[in-house]
Image 1 (cartoon, rainbow, N blue to C red):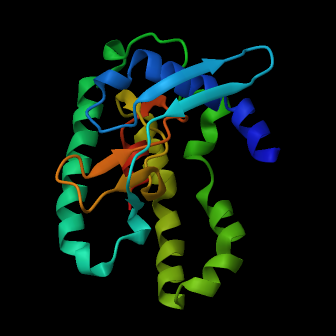
Image 2: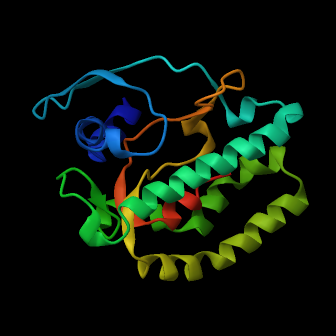
Length: 200
């Protein structure tokens, strides 16, 4: 129930439906085909039926395939750059009526306070990470303010908005495509660095 309420407040359901209706065919990624989609603005109920994608997440790939993964990841990030370039600059982004601008306060958490987030995650991180890794994470937060200031001044483009490993499925047995990009509920207009900072 909490997850559903969060999705409703962020307009995640209608945003993904509208993405598939208006822009999905233009992104340079392999994405699931939407077979059916509908959203009721009154009840906030939504349904999306996507074709099945065979694949595993990045975390499930074995270390033995790391060299192949690096090649695949490079191709995926090249496609990400192509997508950003296609809509680079505010004038090139279509007026779809569903994408949130990163400058809106309702979406400001994307450029939010990572020091506080890291502090909240620390009890869990200490169970899995070495003290050296934790120290590196803490040092990285020192660059956050500089990154946010630079990001706010960058030309804006169309962003996936949640471009992390769990939203990418890899099929090591397939020649093409080997990677599928999922979960287009967070699409937004903002600096391309938003997508890059969420990669591995």
